[in-house]
Image 1 (cartoon, rainbow, N blue to C red):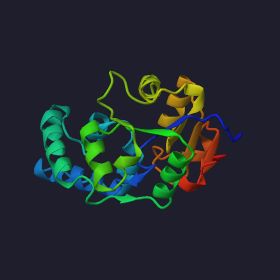
Image 2 (cartoon, helix red, strand yellow):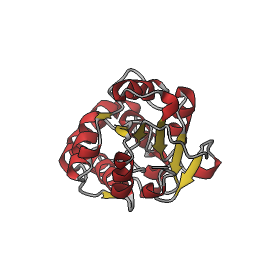
Image 3 (cartoon, rainbow, N blue to C red):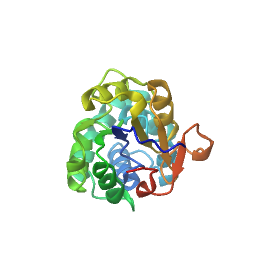
Amino acid sequence: MVISTDWQAAIVDLDGTMIDTLGDFVFVLNETLTALRLPNVDRTFVERTVGKGSEHLIRSTLTEVGAAPALYDEAWARYQHHYARVNGDHAEVFAGVNEGLLRMRECGMKLACLTNKPTAFARVLLRRKGLEAYFSVVYGGDAFERRKPDPLPLLKACEALGSEPACTLMVGDSSNDALAARAAGCPVVLVTYGYNHGEPIRAVDADAFVDRLDELPLSC
């Protein structure tokens, strides 16, 4: 991609981009399933399923284990309880993330965290992992009436940051992030190590790919 000197801000995804949260998801889902006397799921299933919000994850999990859809409300309540209890316990910040965020801030870019994870969980996770101070705003999947891959959350984040979409870099790990960025008119860079619904990340339409967040093509 052409390295821009005009980037005013960046919108950064959370799960799979900044923090490896698969361990949290696997633990919480299996605690929930065990309480419901249902079979557990493995890391491979979770990796290809996360990224579209908690509702999608829970419904997909119930389908995967052959449970009745009517169990959704109870599963949702148990999932929320367990996630609030262990948020971040089984998660790790990816290598290069702190350095990459610091570099963006040093380049004068305002930062927003935009995730499909519920906002309250996102804020707690960022705080627990020492990343919260980098961000001017944090928006989760419950912040707006639509979530990624819809462009609305990106456009709202641009408004909050005071930046034009064309000058606001989207940094993510999946087709959800890329589709939302394209529709919003934002340039998009994807990391190669995240969770892309079990599909090859380099097959996604993006402006560039990086193996670490501190490899972003910044010009300052």
